[in-house]
Length: 386
Image (cartoon, rainbow, N blue to C red; front, top):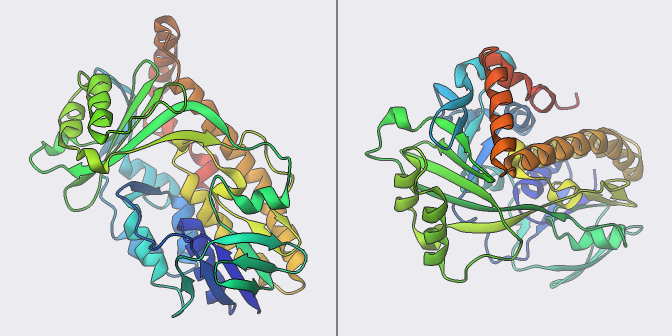
């Protein structure tokens, strides 16, 4: 097919490299970090992303790691259910589970698909020429028939391709993530649930092997994190220490050094295209979103297999990239907007507004377990291009 250079070895970049290699491209992946071992955090692989992973041969290996079962949904800070469904109902509706697993596990599976020598660590990219495919790196100048920029939310390549386009904006929320042992906590207490309070959210997601992925958000000004990890844990305890069980116990178990805090930014103004010349943008570089739908990594995976399909379908690279933009820009724009709308709901802190929000959610929940699932139809009912 030709030479493809992928910038960034995150979930989207590795999926793109694997998908392209599987279609006959000679692939090089440039990663500026010295390793691709991500810090401990969980990742949701929804049915749409599982179907995409099927096209590169690892969908079933991810399904094998499914740990969620039984009741799931949204709760109050006190523990009462606002909206409830079940993992079994989700699988029946979409034909696949939602698999929660450590991000490192997905990275390992994807990296195992790369050809020997394809990954170049400690190799930062400094400049890209979209028309020629020339890329300036720490290792010198490289040239490729196709360049895939999966270099994240602060993508330098995006700024080169679309100078002057607005950067991602602050969502109004900061987020914490950590993984702890769930051993000794009653199995019934470890349901897959997200609990909503006044301007705050706490998620509890069981993983395989007695581990639990926890995440939390709060409505605060950006840049207010703590330099001392112990202070981050103390803030979590102040915010969530009185919430329903097992949230306080899970926070207590957190290793302060492994609590990740990051302000949440998203692409409020969509790009005019996801490509220019021989260069494609993918994942957060193209359409960063808030985490409220759990679709950030899933959409990057969709991008990757769709891109590989179009640029390998015959014809010029530029023609394939134009088809990639036509496929992906409308879908990801809608999901970014939907996720941002949910983010705004979680930020409400006025007691009256919160009471109205919770009342509406409770009434919707009375319609049965499929009511919550219908909200996911647009995201989950996607199949890779044939």
